[in-house]
Length: 178
Image 1 (spheres, helix red, strand yellow):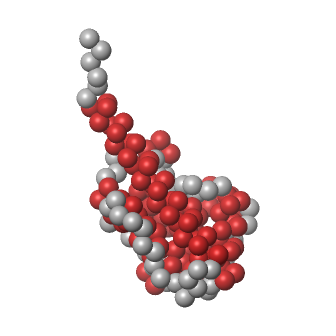
Image 2 (image 1 turned 180 degrees about the vertical axis):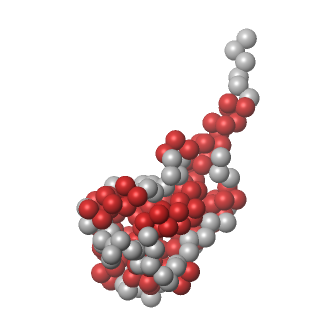
């Protein structure tokens, strides 16, 4: 079981922390799985597989690798897709990513996503009011959409984690029917 401390301590690697060298599929899968295991339910298996990545490329959600190698921009997209897929459909994910990258450079959009996700997770798992990361476009519909999207992911993670903990407690201490 994942503990609340895991979500409180979650760190989404920023643009500058992503590998500068191009990666092969197995390296991308290993990197994503080690970083995102927290967002996966026990019955779901790994957060990402090579088959999933191939499907994301096939459906145009992620650009195709160049000579079978994935660049920093591919890895950033895949981080976002893996996190968004915990709540949203592939079509919604594609639309959400398009909205953000049309408005902001990819590195800025990705870093904001990471910072906002960490902020929302910390607030929600600490039972505090969510305080969003400041944006140059405060009050814009795009910023509100991005914030609400990320907040929904954090709330979903909280609900799933709380239910999982509750289920484990019930299984540890079953009610005696006598």
